[in-house]
Image (tube, rainbow, N blue to C red; front, side, top):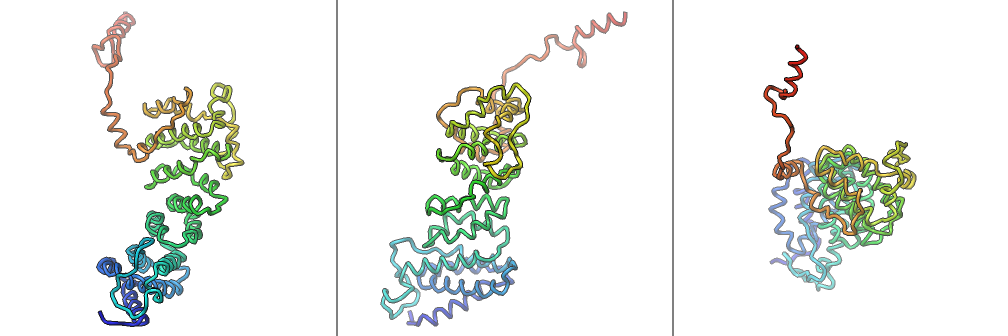
Amino acid sequence: MPKNGPDSNLFLSQTLVEHLLSTKEDMSLLISRFQEFLEMDDVRYYVMSSVRDNIYRVMGRNKKAVIPVYQNNVYTLLSTINVPSHGSKITHFLVKQAYKPEEWKVAKLKEHKRAFEQMWLLFLKFKLPSSMYKKILVVLHESIMPQMSDPTLLIDFLSAAYDIGGAISLLALNGLFILIHKHNLDYPDFYKKLYSLLDPSIFHVKYRARFFHLVNIFLSSTHLPAYLVAAFVKRFARLSLTAPPTALLILLSFICNLIRRHPSCRVFIHRPSAAEEPCDDPYVMEEEDPAQCHALESSLWEIKTLQKHYHPDVAKAAMKINEPLTEQEDNISEMLELSTFELMERELKAERKTIPLEFDTATELLKSPREMLGVHFSLE
């Protein structure tokens, strides 16, 4: 390969990136063709630097505007770039250099990680289309955070996404959880925000299974205060009144698991006369602060109501609170992906016993012999 200087390499990569990141045309096919060159260490490094400069220039002129075609091209290119793992040697170059490896930035893994981090942070700094938030958040914890030198720098992006609401907030939970538990990030209003996300829409979003999986992890600690866990239990119980059967099977097992982990919440079940005597529920559903919703003063009358649910599986699951709960938790992972179709199929395939519905066989439409005899006497 011909020898070349770093300045000319950077210029060539800037020219190439300029064409790949078009503002008017979808370049995904061309980017996929270019992906094989990104396996070369020097090409990858100069492309990352050029992409960063390109984003700064193009998006800098449109700070508050969304450029869907351009941003989609940027995301497509960024998602094809992977930094070598820790301990890997940077030796695969397209163009040979006269520099010693220890003097050349391109030959240092630390510089690759820094370029990768700066490139993504700059891209995420600007406003994105809603669909792109979802794409990024789905792969953030697996494809982006592990390749960054300091993942905590993503806190601004994740906090902004968490405040958007809806499915985007649900997806931002995973990244925030990783920063809190693995990188000791302090997010004081995390559970308060999580509590506010609990509304009827969570049962109908595409990422329902992921959301309940994450909430199960967030509430797994036995050191959480009783009022906080009680607020989540009561909120889930109230939402269960309007939830579909597939979601109810998750909710009922989830509520029982929370009570198992936190014995102080058993007061929900054992509150004297809670089910027999009509009373005003002190729980305030509209309160956004878990500490002020008075959940511990309430009871689980909603679960008692579900014991008469039209679906037999739901009614059976709701009956669990009538008996002492076992120490072993219910496995909710099998129910997270359960669809309405699968639930109906399971019900149709279940064995049924023949139950007599009429003591006297009907001889005419909707009339038994006894009823006919009564009609005869009345006519006489």
